[in-house]
Amino acid sequence: MSILAQATTAAEAALTAADQKSISAAGYAGLAYGLATLGPGIGIGYLVGQSVQAMARQPEAAGMVRTTMFLGIAFTEALALIGFVVFILLKFV
Amino acid sequence: MTSPTHVEGEAPESMIARDMVKKAAIIGPILIIAFGFIWGVHGALSTAYGLAIVVANFVLAAAMLTWAGRISAGFVMGAALFGYLIRLSLIFLAIWLVRSASWVELVPLGITIVVTHLGLLFWEMKRVSLSIAYPGLKPTSASKESTSK
Image (cartoon, rainbow over all chains, first blue to last red; front, side, top):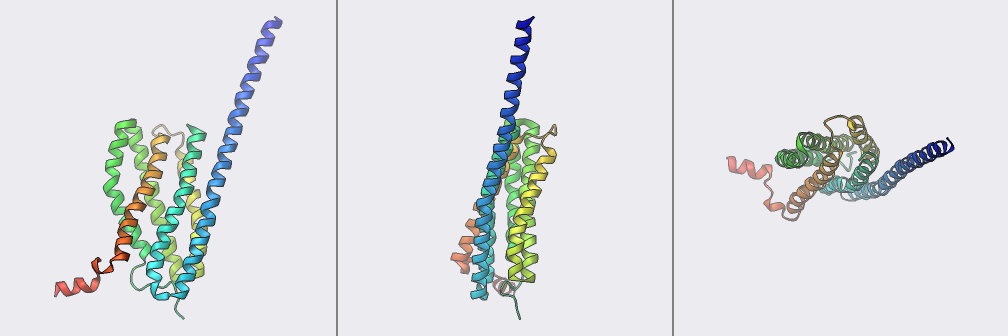
């Protein structure tokens, strides 16, 4: 009887450990996603700030600046997207 | 007083976004068929969904920047930063809503988002850098008018 009780307690303890592990993994995946969006956020802010300054200095080049700014934003955003995809794959697959 | 972001004619972001949609229409079927072979029908559907997310992201970004550019340079800054947050949230929501649907395969969906986003950008960057380096090679409305006469 006591052996059965011990086995049940051990199984419960193992299940709880697995649950805790998955919860902490989800937490770390979320933290990684948050960190992955931080860098691109700073990058986009710097990029757009410099582009606006360039447009103010040379309004005749605004078309070219806006073109390269748009591509720059999209490239910087790719980093956040990669972080997001890694988060999704870690959390759900 | 004119805004320094004011550009004569069509906004460059809209042109880039339209060009990217055309390019996505070219590579989309190839990617869907290729991933369909690897992951089956669900993989093909997930690839199509991922492709739609990427294209919608580009179009939304272009629309927001074009709209902000018509107002002021400071607004471009706000639209770029808040647009980044809004679009990331929308992508998150778009995937979160379908994550447990029967037709969704997360691996091809994730690969499609990253590969298509970067692939379309590099393709577009090649065209843009060529047109900036050699503007004479780019057909303009003036040259079109002279040929039509």
